[in-house]
Amino acid sequence: MMAPSSSALQPVIVGAGPAGVRAAQALVAHGLRPVVIDEASRAGGQIYRRPPESLAQRSAQALYGFEAGRAEAVHAAFESLRERIDYRPDSLAWNAQGGRLDVLHGPTRSTSSLPYGQLIVATGATDRVLPVPGWTLPGVYTLGGAQVALKFQGCAIGGRVVFMGTGPLLYLVAYQYAKAGAKVAAVLDTARLADQLAAAPAMLRQPAVFAKGVYYVAWLRAHGVALHSGVRPLRVLGDAQDSRVAGVAWHDGREERTLACDAVGFGYALRSETQLADLLGCRFEFAPLHRAHLPVRDAAGRSSVRGVYLAGDGAGIMGADAAEWAGERAALALLADNGVAVDAARTAELERKLHKLGGFREGLERAFPLPSDWAAHASDELVVCRCENITAGTLRQTAAAAGADEMNRLKALSRVGMGRCQGRMCGAAAAEILAHATGLPLQQVGRLRGQAPIKPIPIRLAAAPSAEGAGE
Image (cartoon, rainbow, N blue to C red; front, side, top):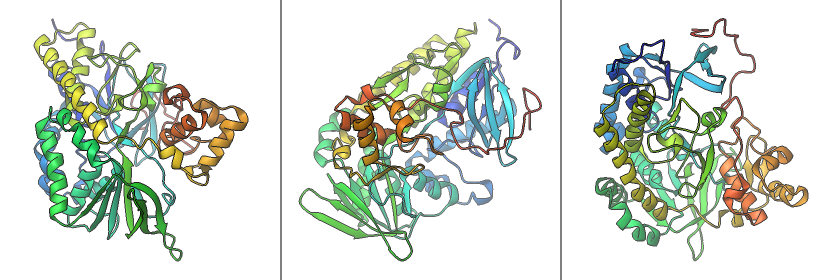
């Protein structure tokens, strides 16, 4: 069967990370020319983020370590596609409705309205944040933010850094910093060593990945980095004179401890970027494994909305390898749904690989669980929503006095999640506070509904003079 003409199929891919690149590769292989829009200036996503070409001095081995080979493969695959796709870097899809994406292009800050017939959403993930007193001080970064500084800008977030939270990214970023020559003062993990030992059998289903994690820990220990597990972060200490990070305090199960530092990177694994899927009308369900509401998709990546496909960490955190497979599988589903013959053996192989990762993913959650007592320990004075300066006490008072037992009602009455980040930073923490305050299961308090713009845009946008390619 011949591939449909470009006028019959209008595939658009949002995101040029591992999922987006492999999706584009599959579409191009079947004779299509997809539009690929991406917020970054260079393809690769967060995991394989590349520095600006003017700063591209460090080797792939230095930037990505064990993942250098896979990173270079993804980068090479994308470069081979450049002339056969409509690539639009530095472009933010900030709204979606009526079969069109509203896109903001930088650095010109022009806008366009991009029609699509079929859409693959590969929006990736961001840090999951559980605030701690002092987290708004200059010098406090998320783990992902710290990693961006190192990979993209070639600099460390401080001269003496503490990494805090839990999840595989905690040790990866600490390793990357120490390997690059930065001073890592300590790694503070809220997960217990017993959690990680208990999860080892499940994680051994992916022995190569498990071995890398063990190596990072062993390397950090061998190079004198203090590793503490089973901790409860208490606060980031601030210098009264220059209002920036001076240290951290934590409880180790026996006593309170402190450590001097001038920067902190923290986070509790990752959360999916689902706002665009929400605006597209995709159906969501609570996913206990991810402790979040996620857009529903089938094994091939089809969402509940015809013509919309979901791939990669934006639909559920599974890692870079899974993102590559899911991106290709979603593209093949798109093709098959539009009458294009695809390799049935390849689709089955991709689904087997993705299914096999499920047990490993469960092991990761067991090894690095979200602190179940975080909300109970969060003081009323703790700022949860930094955009609107909303405290945990305000959220509790709103829940008690106004009967707010659902996230969007809580938002309407307290303004939590109404700021620049649209709840991307505070939403998960606010839901934990509300569930604890009301005694309701987390899944019952719901999620903040996505609103356009999904990320900050200029108040005054240039009007797009035409539907396709406007402002370019």
